[in-house]
Amino acid sequence: MGLMSFVKDAGKRLFGRGDADEAPSEDALKAEIEDLGFDASGLDISVDGDKVHVTGKAASQEEKEKILLAVGNVEGIAAV
Image (tube, rainbow, N blue to C red):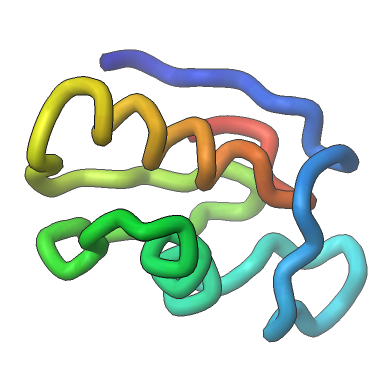
């Protein structure tokens, strides 16, 4: 799956963010995924500015897409 674009200033605001312009941490994004009921243990998440790279294995294609949408629907994230 390629790059998915999102509106950076829209989405859920997560705790654990320092500066308002700063993207959330990898740990905050994993916690958000787990709060939504998905298993984040097999995922590797890295944040590069306002872009997030997610690698790993999901239980299904449907879960994979939901995880990517959940990560992109966080304030401060412009692309996944």
